[in-house]
Length: 144
Image 1: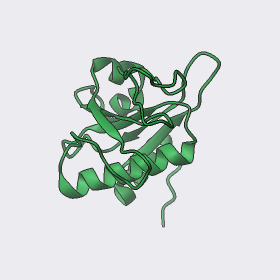
Image 2: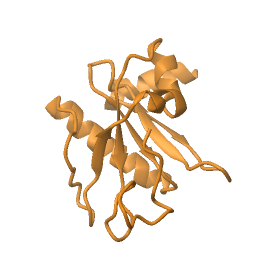
Image 3: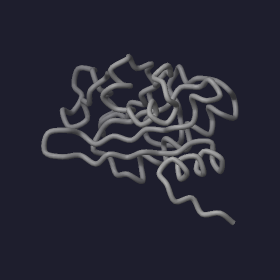
């Protein structure tokens, strides 16, 4: 068994094993944390992005579940996704800013930035999504 030792080899190993790799960036004093996938763009699907100061295990679980469903059905999420929580996850097609501000390692891995990104919006505890009136400011994350 060959154990991958470079960053690129680790990413490729995860993609080969599970279909995607997850990058997580922890928050700092000025910026929210975020996590995203690498690997879905190669078969023509979008990469997935979650922005917010959520527990890394939550973000990874959501990205893994939605990514797996997307790859199994070869269908881009375009409506609310129920994975068993109190509220569904809301997908939205992100713009070019998502690629330059959040998913930069995808472009480096692929060697280009011609890929789509779907942002997965998680609601606040009352069920309000980012951008909606009443959304708790702690959950009202950027929508690039």
